[in-house]
Image 1 (cartoon, rainbow, N blue to C red):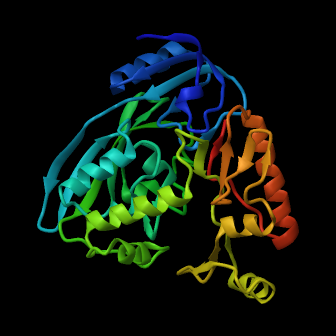
Image 2: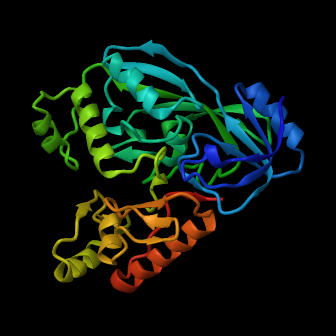
Image 3: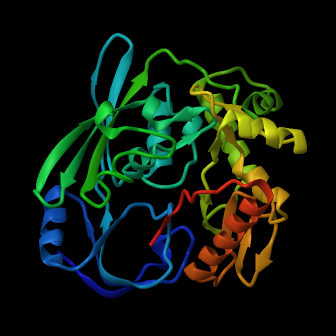
Length: 335
């Protein structure tokens, strides 16, 4: 066990926010995790993955434990599916490429999403018409209090829109160790969402999991900032879901409002569009700002503090409520 005292987390969060952890260490196995939890005693501790979905607003007066459990293995297959188990510390996009290289379908629409495998079920990550729950089989997680490894099935996770039991009911009670995915031998292409079909035409290539993946990568890189160049955590807010009656009223005053009907009769609204209509796209105050190409992405242009990013998000939320009577919810976890 190697503990680092008063350790900078600047390179461990994609917002590139400078914050200090009182204690910092990495773990590569469940046994190392248990040892670190015991060592932390009564102190608070934060388990960190890829750091792509957090906003650090202050120094962390406790233990920050970096999950680096690795490994990707095909564990079984049947007539239609291949089951792939990945360590929670594996980079998500690298895992997607592992599957695509082996013609395993299901995650191609989720290409280039930042972060690690362990966060994927926690957030029920999604993009371009596909969510993690569509390919999820099960996961193993360490129960912090009982010091036991527990298996969670699809039903156990209670997946919702960017939600799971690990974000609400069991928040801070478990550490995800690995995830097993059920991938398709025969692909079911999903190209109707966003600009995938248009990009495929531009590429001049047929439809395959490889070309869909490349189309998604092309789209994301064209409109989303690279965290290596500009600090950000991707989509900062969730797309809000509103009743159909409320949507009908908004549509009268805002005919260009992008919306997606849901199976339960509600309507999902594009949060980026709402923010842009409130005049925030391209806004900058000091080094905290809203990206010039995608209003859903808040950015750190260099030396913004987490509090400055947070305060900006509060201003954005208030303006959307004032103009549209819609309350935005952060997708990013504020620490």
